[in-house]
Amino acid sequence: MREVSFLRPERRRSREPEPETAADALGALLRRVARGDEQAFEALYDAVVGPVYGVVLRVLRDPAQSEEVTQEVMVEIWKQAPRYDASRGSARGWVLTVAHRRAVDRVRSAQASTDREDRVAARDTARAFDVVSEEVEHRLEAEQVRRSLDVLTDLQRESVELAYYGGYTHRQVSEILGIPLGTVKTRLRDGLIRLRDEMGVVA
Image (cartoon, rainbow, N blue to C red):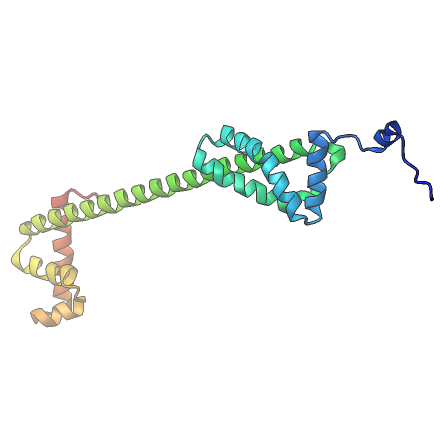
């Protein structure tokens, strides 16, 4: 009969691998994830998603946003796993650094968006105010001009209204009124001088 050799118990125990620490396990999982191992990623996800959420929540202080950013962090870990360098720190530390950085980026992005909205709102408010102010000023000036027309003679007022409210040229005013062009220009000049004086405009 062929002899079957058996290892003595103490020899057998000495050949069994030492149990991995949690840190070693995470590092091993990350290395497998870096090679595209989806099962390793599932295990890594279960191991770190809680701490990742905790880090993100402390920065954002908003559970809904924190859940969203946590998912973004896990996607980033899947993509960036090959960049993990065990010589520069633990796998857990690397994962939580990614989480913290992503959360801070979200805060900065939200703040930048708020600042842009504030600037746009302020600009629109200023523009709306300017438009209203200009419209009011224009109407007041137009009303003042209309009241001032009363100081003109009928002939001056007729020429001014045709030229400045009717939009006619001096020659067209001349033709409409059936008077020489020089007379139209004189009436307009004298009428505008009287308007200027009436409105208190300094020449």
